[in-house]
Length: 296
Ligand code: SAM
Image (cartoon, rainbow, N blue to C red; front, side, top):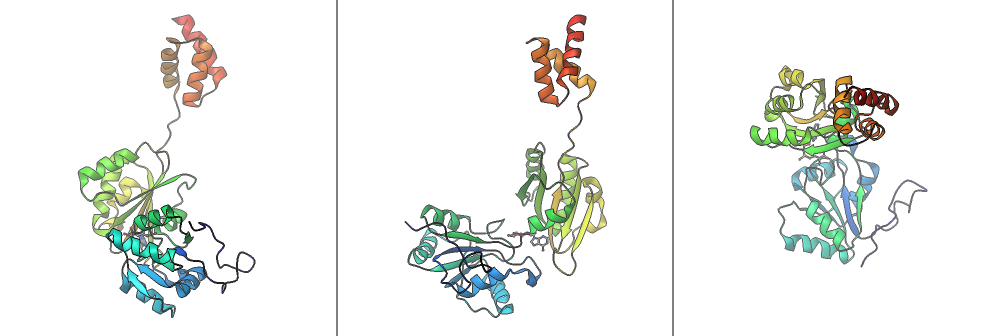
């Protein structure tokens, strides 16, 4: 069983010097989402030193490597690769090979191939290490102006409206900012379904991030759905949707909850239960519970 952690080449003082031998392993390497300048120094170093680069599309990766004057061996690998291909890659690493996994853009495995390979490599105890960098989801989230403390990446919504609405219904109760990938031709239908299911939540449509025609359109979901810039735009798109409003509990909500609780328990216990559920003052609720009990 191989050691599953290693210190890797990095800036001075943060690990072995860049030219220290690269340990055998799988290097899950992020590449730019548009702007070639976004390849990290470390990604460039690793891609120049591995024995093999596994690419989603070898032509796309060849262009990136050529732009940096890198000439590693490149082979195709995607999630349709059969088990024998995966085993072959793992055997190569187990025998001392250094293999980088890249996708066409951004971080591998984020709506991109690689899950089966990484899972199998982890199960075999091989070194699997990230070479982090761009991802469209985080790039969009970071400029959305929407809450970033809790977010849920939901990938591509289903292409057909019925399944898509069911998908959004499932996400509606989630108290977090939602991040979706979408294609230009489907954007307006998808936004219309989001607006119908999620309501007028604040949102952002980000297009062609880091590229020449980078665009961000912000507004409530129904406004985005109607915005001419969101009607079948060209290019690659991320939609970020803010969490639903948590409606402050009204006095009527509190009374109803207290009445129900008082049927089961004492005023003190009912006040404690409702205070926790609705985020209201326990002391005020206790006073109210006594009033309701007296009126009953
Ligand atoms: N693994 C990639 C990542 O980490 O971002 C995502 C791959 S997924 C197959 C491609 C989708 O990501 C596109 O359809 C689009 O939704 C989004 N995307 C990729 N690059 C983008 C960009 N420059 N601007 C906006 N969205 C982008």
